Amino acid sequence: MPCTIFCVGHPLIDMQVRQAEDLITKYNLKANDAILAGAEHEPIYEELVRERQVVYVAGGAAQNTARGAAYVLTKPHSVAFAGCVGDDDLAEQLRAANQREGVIDAYQVKKGQKTGACAVLISDGHHRSLVTTLRVAKDLDEGHLWSPTVAPLITSSKVIYLEGYLFTHRPEVSIRLGKKVSEMGKILVVNLSAPYIPRLYSAQIQEIMPYCDIIISNEAEAEAWAVSNNHAEPTNMSLVAKAIALHPKANPTPPRIVIITHGAHSTTVVCADKPDRPKIYPVPSLKEEEIVDTNAAGDAFAGGFLGAYVLEKSLDECVGTGHRLAAMCIGQEGPQYKWPNTRS
Ligand code: ADP
Ligand code: MG
Ligand code: MG
Image (cartoon, rainbow, N blue to C red; front, side, top):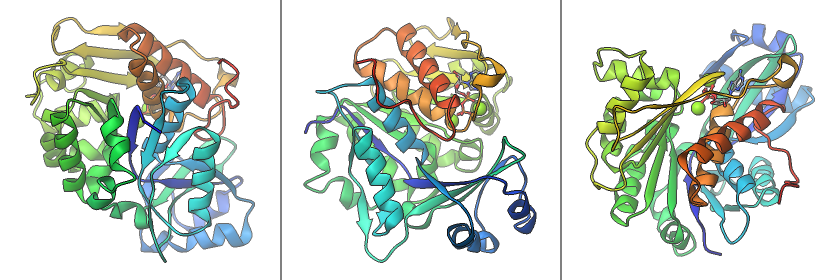
């Protein structure tokens, strides 16, 4: 089946547990936080399976985005997701979510290895402490992307989407992929994903940037990029978006689009061909009771935006679709969309 959007990232299964106050104390975690598991946290995953009622939900930033884009699109447009998993139950659960939601699964499976997971420890009703163990997710091989089953998904796609977390391990795989697809005339989209990405992996981000046609970030990531690049006004989103838009680009067309979301605040968009005319889009406000879980709102936004983008909608409509998918994701526990999609 031809593919329209090809997403790459760390496949992770979210393991949600409620009333996790004791675990937060035991593992010395903060109630509202997101960390990579250290050796001291590793036993938590087994403990959850053994002793708790775990709700398994498909997660992983780019996979959330792929599922969001699939929600917006209907055939003949389709969305694929590539990442590295083990040959275990967790991979089966991720695969089932993709299948249910119409995402083509292009997983690399490593025998005897474990699929990445994110412990989502919910305390006092709405606090969330996320503890991620990447396991085999960090080991995606370049050869897999260009294998006979996966390469056609890339070559038929219009858009290639990379989550920023990819730049923490084996960045050369993502940078070479970005360069190659840009040379093929595809639209390369990168999400900065977390403030520590532009902060700690600034060199890798600089290396991929010339190939990027669209860059998506939230306000904290944009600020971190600006600080890493000695920008004079790192909290001025219009100016930071302009600086990212005007960063050197390998292909002169299309002009780069930079999108900075900011939670409930307005979303800022700057196109490189009109760098001094930022577009500011207000976010439709949500009532307190409509906000169930803001986790993965930005991933959902990216999915909505890209779905509309490949349908050749206007920029205004793409941002509007992004905001709608984000609101839908926020209205539910975990990164989920309201399937079945009765809209189409
Ligand atoms: P990230 O999840 O990457 O931090 P944001 O927090 O900027 O991304 O959220 C992305 C989008 O989700 C926003 O542009 C907005 O549409 C929606 N959103 C996030 N938080 C809220 C909120 N509190 N109220 C309404 N919409 C929100
Ligand atoms: Mg946010
Ligand atoms: Mg985000």
